[in-house]
Image 1: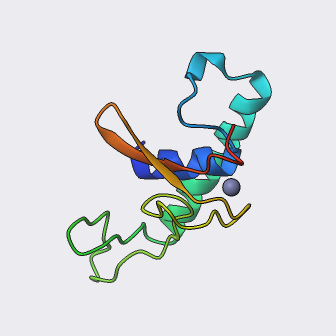
Image 2: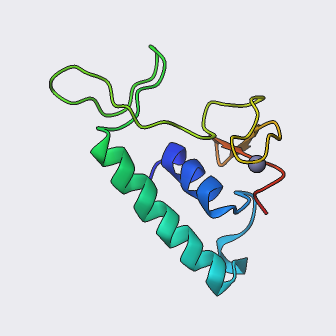
Length: 105
Ligand SMILES: [Zn+2]
């Protein structure tokens, strides 16, 4: 999956994106799996995500943009909608990811 939806799923699962996948507990893996299914199901139902003019995600053929609302991606510096802590951004393997340093562990 792409980095945008990966960031969204990790936020929902409250998992810090800097953690190594092989160090997650079974409970965390279960939470992440549930979050990935939720994020992708919701994004598809909302016809994807529309970002700013320079970058665009999937667009339906009608020309309308998708309406999936991003909780963390592209919100660096904005308050986390769950706890109010400012969202941070890091670069991992050349891709940008955003997360909440307080409620993602
Ligand atoms: Zn938070």
